Length: 234
Image (cartoon, rainbow, N blue to C red):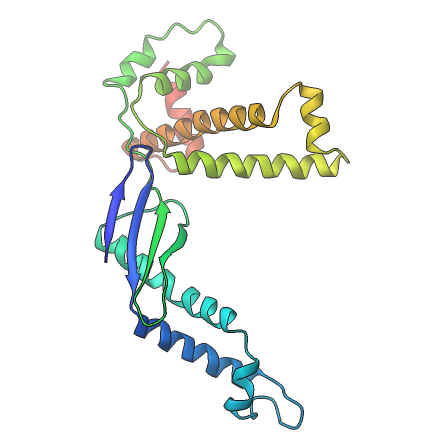
């Protein structure tokens, strides 16, 4: 079974299967590898008979290793078949996994959003009323974000939010602080922090995808040149 579903929140679900015969073959390779690497008293490394080694092996670890060797190829095959260009490493879970039956999986990921810049944005930027020259780029970027059309996938916002929260936790640890005390000092709840982080992550992602669209459209080499180009329009 191969099926791709695009959800309204930008998530892409890929349902695919791996034949039981492939799982058995991959598991067999893992057993052979384990036998070659196992040391048992009375035998040189890798020379102990399989019938002595195999009962001592962790069957769950063998199966996990077998699946880890198969999943990347199976996932990439369905992504290629549907001409997908994921921007996140997929989250994969088993939906059907019984012995002697093909196993089924669901992978969730997302692609970069399609960005539609405002029509004739260059002329519009030229006509912006910017009172403070130091805020020129901020005003330009704000205009583009407010007038461009794009939807940031939910998974991308979640991934970026988790990254930022993890970075915050590391910084607090370096200052010998913990999250509860930090939240208390900010008069925030955990939910407030998550919502605030997600909101800012969404804004920043919108800006980056818009700038990337401008960069590609103008065939500019990098982000700095893109900002320089936008600033030159005023």
